[in-house]
Image (cartoon, rainbow, N blue to C red):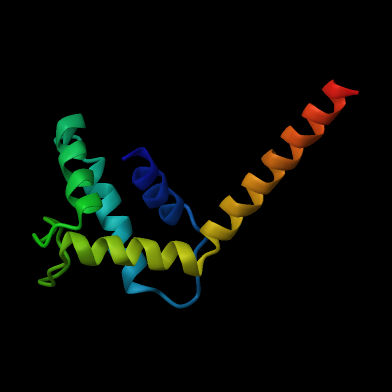
Length: 110
């Protein structure tokens, strides 16, 4: 659940782009919905659970008359992450950690 929250925050913190992406706008609105004062921790947990499970219910955010389901939102999040190099940066970080651990283990055995 925290991983999905991190992904949403990552998208929200991306630098602005010249061409507006409607998927990004939807994810940003969903983030504001998650952190709304009246939402609370329990409400946030329910929302993230629906998102992770890919519920076919409509997300309760104002999109000027448009409706988005949780499964569609989940796809948008993953597409945006992939497009913006999220998984590539995670892979690079994991490789650095692995190399650092290997170097540390080798130095201890010498």
